[in-house]
Amino acid sequence: MDKKVIFSGIQPTGTFTLGNYLGALQNWAALQDEYNCCYSVVNMHAITVRQDPKDLRANTLSAYAMLLSVGIDPEKCILFIQSHVRTHAELAWVLDCYTQFGELSRMTQFKDKSARHPENINCGLFTYPSLMAADILLYQADLVPVGDDQRQHLELTRDIAERFNGIYGNTFTVPDGYYPKLTARVMSLQDPTKKMSKSDDNPKSYISLLDPPATIVKKIKSAVTDSDSLVAYREGKDGINNLMSIYSAVTKKSLEQIENEFVGKGYGDFKQAVGEAVAEALRPIQEKHAQLMREKAFLEDCYRAGAEKAQQVSQRTLDKVYKKIGFLPR
Ligand code: TYM
Image (cartoon, protein in one colour):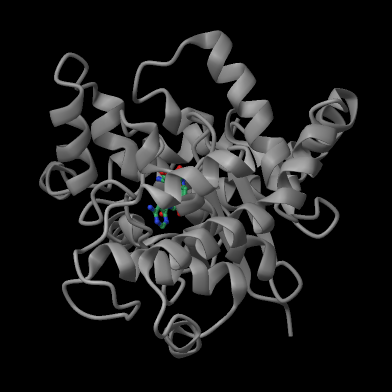
């Protein structure tokens, strides 16, 4: 039987955070043997917020190198940059015409981002989820490994696919989300009721995947926690729950093992251990990233080959869609 298909994407806005890694990227690498995986640096999504062109170019290359650094193997997966593959913009337009204004108006990410950038509430920000649906549906993905914040977009993708299939007959695979158990929502270190985000103004609130070890330990040590001193996963202990989830994800220890490890010890010891474990987990990724960033020609070869494969696979779906909706072939 053919392997199932996975698609996921990440925006090249700034350096990825520990949230990106534990919520998504770690799974991307883990799933690549069992599935046919397509992963994309979605730079077209990134311009829904104003970007400096020089930074966007540099961040896109760095993001691509980071995906290789977390263990994604371009021989096993299709790894590409979204703007290199034209089918994405083309299908997005078609899907825009099968997505309701009311549906897009309900997207919480749109509401959040328009509140944060009141000077630039552009139409791309509004229709962003139908571009995301196009990304996924072009590859007939069965599964989409993402963090919890993408759940609503994924539900909309399913609705769009089902609607289209309902009108034109089976065209798209209806995808399911794939979320990690403990780290689908890694929280801000400074406000553990908010998700960790690379666009947070306070860099102490997130760990960047390229933070030096000493910075990582320092940021975790200054993480906001509660005022008792019990290392235990309990309701109301948001800060500690977050750090325990992170520690569990990087060490593969269960929550119970972690509780036992820190019986009779305080938050100081616990935070030190979490900081060191995170720094240790990121060390090989950082080394690989530094090495790849010196190998520009290799990166270029990789993303060109990825784009070619992606174009080929996605064109099949786009052709099918154009035929079904009645576009006269050229
Ligand atoms: P983006 O670039 O914001 O984030 C990339 C991935 O990281 C996850 N993530 C988190 N997971 C856990 N805790 C956090 N604090 C955290 N912050 C981010 C996100 O859930 C995501 O999986 N719209 C998408 C990009 C996209 C996409 C796609 C994803 C475009 N097309 C198609 C899947 C399929 C986004 O903005 O992710």
